[in-house]
Amino acid sequence: MAEEPVTQTIGKQKNIALIAHDGMKKEMLEWCGWNKSLLQKHFLCGTGTTAAMISSKIGLPVRAYHSGPLGGDQQIGAKIAEGAIDLVVFFSDPLSAQPHDPDVKALLRIAGVYDIPIATNRASADFMITSPLMDNEYNHRTIHFKRATRDFKIRH
Image (cartoon, rainbow, N blue to C red; front, side):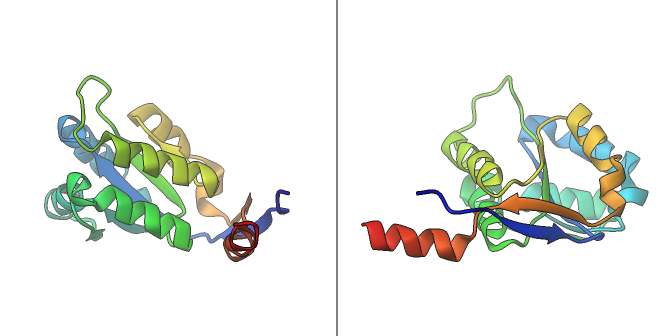
């Protein structure tokens, strides 16, 4: 039996994860530079190299996790599950095979489970970051983690 979702509030100041595959890092840097004035209003984090490049080349403070292939995608996913990330901008490279593809799929899945907006290319990132919702609180419905895990333990 599915639990009723709970409403959670994303504050005016968002927690944004920034991720880019190697073939998309240049595009991520261009996008961050173009949107610097919008991004500096929010808390930023990202996977290793991407976060370091954005900090050094664009001048935005970005908390760095491990690089994607070394567990960074999983760290971002864990932060989503903890409620510490409100949206994700992930410039994936659709034309190159990624050795950590299962980690990427897990990240996309957990973002879906917790109703977290995720942009996977520049156009979707542009639409997301320029949405009027970026400057306001937003209530979204998600699973109640403690209730869901309690019920899972009871059933199994």
